[in-house]
Image (cartoon, rainbow, N blue to C red; front, side, top):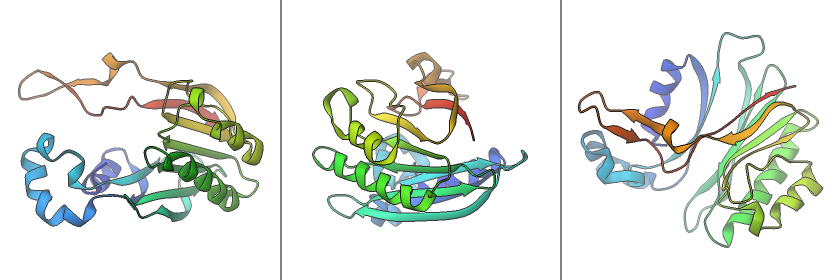
Length: 203
């Protein structure tokens, strides 16, 4: 998501947050004015970041610590980040490279956050750019780090779990749920080409 959205989203959702800048941010001074006026024209060239939101107001629902690590810088910067909540659950995310670099990014991210989390319950999610039906990386993630819960054999967006109690398994929203009305025209807008993946977990 564009970094400039982070603070406003955190305020709107009453959340603490962690941003980790990723790719295409070097052009932000040039693209920001266009992105505000015509975001559909700039697309991802507005710059990107990973964002983790932890909503305040519930017991344990605050961020105790924040960490991030760069997985690669070429052809685009890829980052894994993690927050440890006061409830004990660690939440990590990444946006992996495309093509042959995806599996390496995901496995390296899992190695890093496994060390950060220690014995704490761990959720690792994001755009893995990997489909379980055509990649052995998910078998290695389970074998090496105990991470399970891929969304589906053809999905590339996943929430994987280790040591957390899954109350509702991860599932992607249907297309119709992703469409929101534009207040100016009444037309339906689809805010992302990726369907959100949701679940409920407890430690």
